[in-house]
Length: 178
Length: 192
Image (cartoon, rainbow over all chains, first blue to last red; front, top):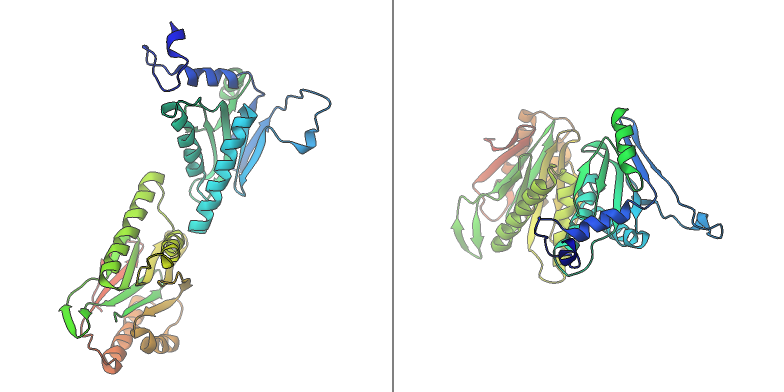
């Protein structure tokens, strides 16, 4: 049943689902976990680095954590190459905003822009969605410390604590109970 | 050439603009309002080429409104000033907006902020400012009588002195001015 409606990203299934987006989320579920927790004094991001080989020069690459601007950083779960594209776009957007307004971009806006880019790949172009989920952590004068999560559909939400990647449902229930 | 004057006081900014619209020797309108409220706590005074002035003020206002609607956050006066400056700077070498701008806003935490912009892409935060021929006459008055933290009556007094100077010494007749004030309660017209 799914077979007929899952090869093209830009069409719905009869049940109203976008299979490619769901498959992308499936890919993220196999990646190393990342967790974020918000407090009144700051935001903590933690990410599990999966060491695939002893030969890998770990200090020279970062596949999990990235700085977007001085006041925003993010953790990644999913296809690293996909993440790199979006991270670069976010960094450019943050600097463009800083250039135009001479003040740092509000955290929600950078997340929204990334979300909008991801959404575009679910609606037109015939290209597959990004196989990445992000947890953004940042601070701005408008809302203080903030934590956001995005997924391949382009949807985003603000969280007090969240997790992405492998075993994230389990992490969520632990975070919820605490 | 239109006269614009803006003066910062204690928690507010008072702006004045002459209400004459003229080209060469002909006065077309005596009651033109050159000060536009762009949101709840910011106003922009624009002088210069009348077509450009109106188009520019509407461009700034629309973009600020859209930005605030999309982001859910009120823009800071400094953000609007730099955004506006950017438009002027990029238009300069294509099709310049022949406008002089005074942007006045009162931000909830930071307090009053006044910006002096011109068509070349200049943008400076100032305590008081003037554009047009008024510039040459009133800056001296303001240098002399302005102090930080003046209340409304004191600022009105200085503004009256500035207007008197223009009407006494400027060759072209500018009989009428419109005054607007911006403070924590918003933008409104005022008698001086």
